[in-house]
Length: 287
Image 1: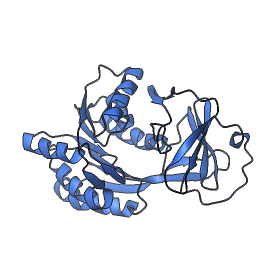
Image 2: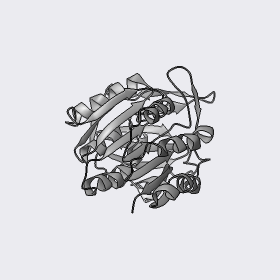
Image 3: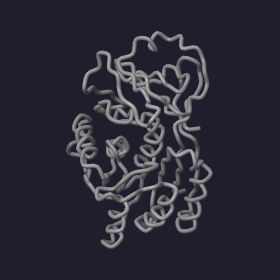
Image 4: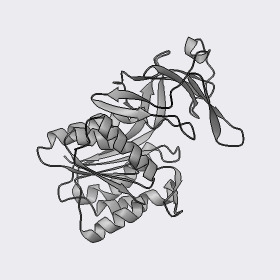
C-alpha cells in the first residue's frame, strides 16, 4: 500500500462504526467511510468535541451538522495551500491520500531534466495540478464542473502559483481528449482521477467500469514520443489494483515499454496504528 504519511495539517485520528475522525488544520470533522466496518471504542475526545459531523441518510446522501466551523479555511502541504469548505455529499474539496501520488510524480517531473507537459483529467480542485506545477511541469487542468475549476484556481492563487503555466479547461474529459487527438497535441504525462459515476456538462453519463478502458486507449494516443508517467486513481471497489495494472499493462507497455505498478492508497490512523484504505492507484512510468 502507498501511504500518504507526510501530512502535518491533516490526520485521521480514529475510525470506528462506519465513521472516521479527522483533523483538518485546527478543525475536527466526523465523516462516514464505508471501509470502516470495525467497531472499536470511540475513546478519543474528538468524537464528542467535533466541529462538523456529516450524517448519512438511510435514503441516500446525507447532511452536515456544524458546531463552530467556518465556511472556509485552509490547510497546507509542503508549500501548497488548499481552501477547504464542507459541501454536498460529505466532501471538503481535497482527498489527502493523494499526497502519496503527488510525491511520486513530483519526483518524476523534477528528475526528468526536460520540460514536462502534464494533462490532468477529472482534475477536481487541483491537488495534482498544483503538485505537478510546483515540481516544474506545465499542466492542462480539465474538469466538467465550472465551480471546481474556479476552486482549483483559488487554490493555485493561495499556493503562489497564479502565474504558473496552467491551462484551465471546463469540458467533458472524454470529448476534450478526442479533440486533442484531432488537434495533434501530445503530453509527457497523464493523470486521471475519474468518479465512479458522474454526468458531463450536457448530462453525459459516466460510469467508470464501462468508460475507463476506452478512455485509457484514447489517452495513449496523446502521449508524446518519450512519455514520463501515467497515473489512474480509482475509488471504486470493483476496480482492484490488479485490474488497473492489467489495463495499463495492455495499453501502454507494448508501445512505450516501462513498468506498471498498482496498489491500494491509504492514510495512517494515529490513534491505533491502523491504515485506512482509500481506493487504489495504478502507475506506469518510463524506465
